[in-house]
Length: 116
Length: 113
Image 1 (tube, rainbow over the protein chains, first blue to last red):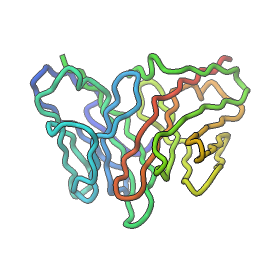
Image 2 (cartoon, one colour):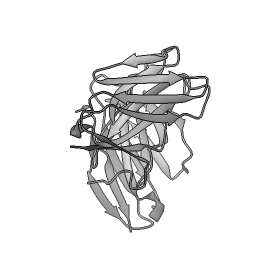
Image 3 (cartoon, each protein chain N blue to C red):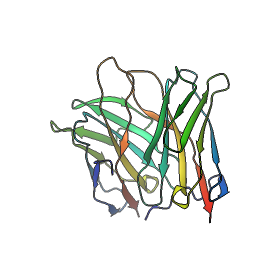
């Protein structure tokens, strides 16, 4: 177990709705990254949060947004849901130290989102 | 649970044999590489990592080899066990600053008893 938790486990929404997914990072970690994993594919980077600020973003539209809280937990929000947003959403926590190389990212179990 | 890797390349090995999973990475500026194991219904699990200033790194029953000349990464699993059956992903990170991981498409490992 990595100590990274996500909620909810499963979620069903309809097109056009909005969704909020939650992630609690591993104790001692200050960075949270979010990934989308479509069926049969590898995870795709959405964005990363470090010290409550966005620290890099992948090729996802603005309707994907996020937050990081002072306790380093995080939320992923998706507005105007589309059918193609159906996927497993993964968060990963890591420890970022200034000037150091990237540290290992540890993943949570994911939230399975189905958009009908 | 989540079904991962329905149409992935599959490597089938006998229990007790050694397994080698290969990965070609895309960016010559990548400086950090990780292998993850993903079982059905679970998130990716860290196996082993290697930095670009190394060619080889060993863990418990696993070895990662890095060939920067041809941008190739491999994961060797010794004495493969049924519990090793999963989808394996390699991931690369490009430099400091942006610490996003770029994942490969994955390989399904099936261990036959």
